[in-house]
Image (cartoon, rainbow, N blue to C red):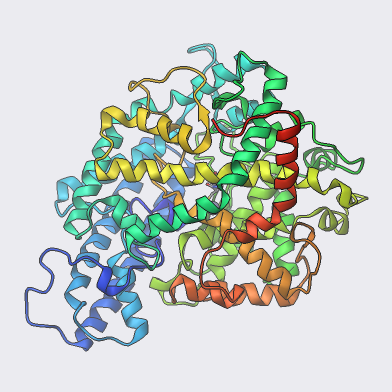
Length: 614
Ligand code: X8Z
Ligand code: ZN
């Protein structure tokens, strides 16, 4: 997450890129009461708003940085106040901007007007008491997640924070211990339930005042198309990929059944959530070692290699930075190394969920991450640096354009680079000695799929749940029921024990209390393969996509930078076209990348009589 993510709840001024077409934008109440304004008035209004939101955004960003790095009652209060000021201003400008909808403006100003109308991710109602209350709720939910711990022996120490629990879920194979840890961490959500429901009420009220049906409609309006079209677009992309997911699910279920037996893992039904190596069952790479796919002799364990070489947290970040430099990007500023947080402090609570920031919207780039020396974090640091290099690439744009083309683009950049962390690349930088032959590709693709393909339905359903909650289709007394229905429907998983409405399981996933929209990650999974396909073409790669690394290729770097530096100044299809020549999000790049694996999975499922579906 980063500045624009942190403040999606409190200041989304420069955060949520994209925008609906003018005619699709709702008319806010009170808009256009007076005589039609002139173009000059519109320009002045937009420029004043832009400057004010920029100033308030930087202030809120600093407060947010301190709060997430030193969680105390006081920092929470300071962040809430700064957030309230920024969020209230953003909602006010968003509403006022509609007064200028009737004015014909040059394209750049018209785009700014659209972005201004969307410049609030979670608008407070027009009432100071409600504004204060919302800001407090938002900051306290974020803080609660950061402070969250599971104490296996009740009040007795040691207690485990989310980083320790993630490690346990990744490494432990004892189903009873996994179940305990799963239940233990999920208890973090229960105390949030009431505040979450209140937050929804306040945000919906604020959204209605801006002319949106609810917060979900506002969030879905950020993709240069009407909100309903965006929901359909996501379903279209998911339909392209569902058969691949179902094959993977069938194979993994079969393999887990072999390990854990029929009592724990059903032949036909959903997979219990605690057995997939991840506290949210969102990525399954940690159960790779349980899969009996043929492992080539040259296979390697990057976590072990990094640990054996005594790579430290900073060293991990340097690997990521070096990749970007090899593409022609300038090194990170000195302040990045001075101000970032790379390891979990022993003496205080911090929000460990990885995030990337540009605090002053110039070059005060930072990451905040509790880095562990393992492959997963090696990838995540590339992800975070993708945010930082994007932020820097658009930092000469006017403030309202200092954002990604749409939020999926922001999430996809670092992941695209991580796709180039191939065995060939690792050999080139001296981390491994030999690269597996083509016969080992299935194993490589399986490892990739356990991370990338397994994630897709989770990436989709988190916001499906929130959209249902925001629209009122799901009431507070059905929060958990609806959550688990979606988990079952899309992911084919079930909780390890029965859940009730005294729990609040969505609260155990950072982005829900952190109020960060999640559709972006679903889009990013798809976009990153599209970006990679285009970059590899640019780099002259002719082999299979999974073998391509753009490391050191300046032409590819230049092409990437061209898109990044546009920021949000153009609708996302134009930005996409700059890099790929395509104007649509397209899941075929991902499907083609994994096509050989899909064939292999289908064969395995058939040969082992693993049923598909749940
Ligand atoms: O939250 C993140 C990043 C920060 S923007 C670490 N991700 C999602 C998650 O952890 O749930 C990256 C993948 C999905
Ligand atoms: Zn991210």
